[in-house]
Length: 166
Length: 196
Image: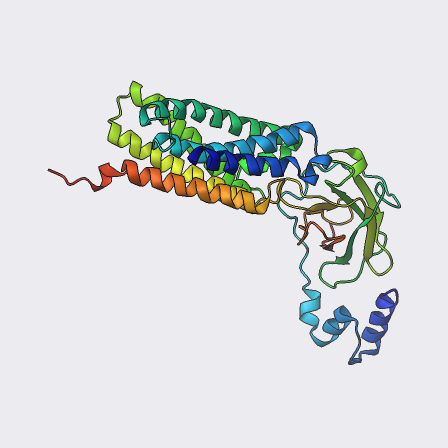
């Protein structure tokens, strides 16, 4: 949704509520300003930082790919999508352990605040098929996530960040 | 008959785990740690059968002697299990031991581990401190009951190399054998005995 940010600004400037728009954040921002202003920051999950290797390189793809890690990054409070934010990703996959450097990679969010990185298939390790994601670039407070796949057969995994300025 | 059922109950889960596709993506030390856990589960089934003298050809007397040795083997399995996992991913094991892991089965496993260590320690201490048999039996039984229950929850919640059906069967039999032995041996007698 690239026009998201611009539309929302226009709406706010115009001060009009446009019914029926699919831009959920913008809509809730207009109708219930208090809740949008209060968008709470994402808290780190237990075990999220395990086997973290700081400074994973930005890559087009981790290893051979076949699995997609996706998500969104927004700013706490107003929920504005954040562009160019570096998200680091690692997991136990068919190509390596969490501790292996080749299991780690990073990507940047687009203008709409979404990110998407192809990586090898995540396989169950330590009892659960799960991935790790980190925001650890300094402008906002560091967040470590550890989402769990609902099935080991899944080909995607999603994690959303709401970041608090540092 | 009893022996062949027992052998199957133990061998089938091990064989299914040995054929798990997950093994292809694991290092030898992680694989060994996993199998130490499975052997440990099998020993949790064997232990009450030995203590209760239910295995043909092994009376209660011989059974108790084997029970002590297989108890030591069980301790070794737990140590190998935890040590192997530690080498595979130290922060995950530290989280588990400190009860701050995101996975609930970790806490159950650690509770079972400490209960089993305590049950074994009680065996060593009962002679030194001359604990009256009814009391040490109650303590040993209570601790191993916690160990069996904790291990079963631990194992069932894990998505790992074991097959769901064979794992569930092994766990159910371990619980059944423990309940039967505790009931038959009246290990809790000290609690129900009428005061003179």
